[in-house]
View 1 (tube, rainbow, N blue to C red):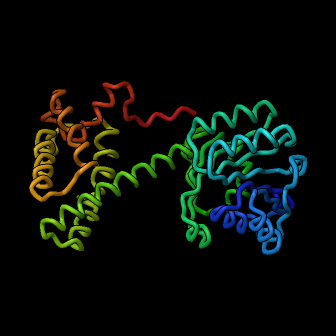
View 2 (view 1 turned 90 degrees about the horizontal axis):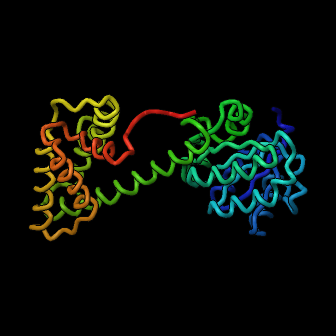
View 3 (view 1 turned 180 degrees about the horizontal axis):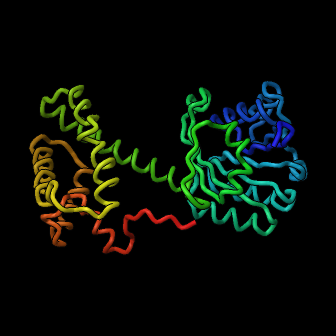
Length: 299
């Protein structure tokens, strides 16, 4: 695939404009957006050509979506799908769910058009600096076909599995980050109320052998995925420590939400008979609910 390939970008918001900048360095770029100012900027600064009607993308090789809502992505594909040429590929970089990807793929399949998802992990500044990461899902041969476009967007790329898996990975990553944000806000309030040096607390929580890292790099990566719950910190001890945190918060007048909710999980695990297992065995609860934590990729 050479620089003569035609790439159309739908979406010129703050992130989309940075995506356009990177694509325009390599490809003949077409752009579409409802914002007239953004279109003019892309035309004058990037030499992009605006898409005025669906027929304008009839000979386009790659359609890149960078849109604020999955409903908008689907509507765009409904409009342009019948006009795309055989062999064209849609690359969904918007933040959407796998179910949204499945709807898009079904719509495109009717026109014999392939797609992949390549969620952008970056802020606008990171994208501008070339520090973005792509979380990719799709058939290997289609991902390979899209390699020149993906390489133009970001050097860092991780293929997570089948179509929709990259989008799911981004949603999960963001969910964890947002949940941890609530937990660390609660922790900061607890620390302040009990005269704990926040700089030193941050160092403690950042320690790779404890704090925030340990549940991920040890208990998920080693214990849960290997179903190894022997030894370690017992569930009943973790539950006791969790109760101490609730008591500390109550005595300090600090409202808790995430930490309070998480304590209930430990109580359920103890009640389920996992009191002497390592506290990573909370994952057994999800086994019982029919959605186990397993590394079983279905390609």
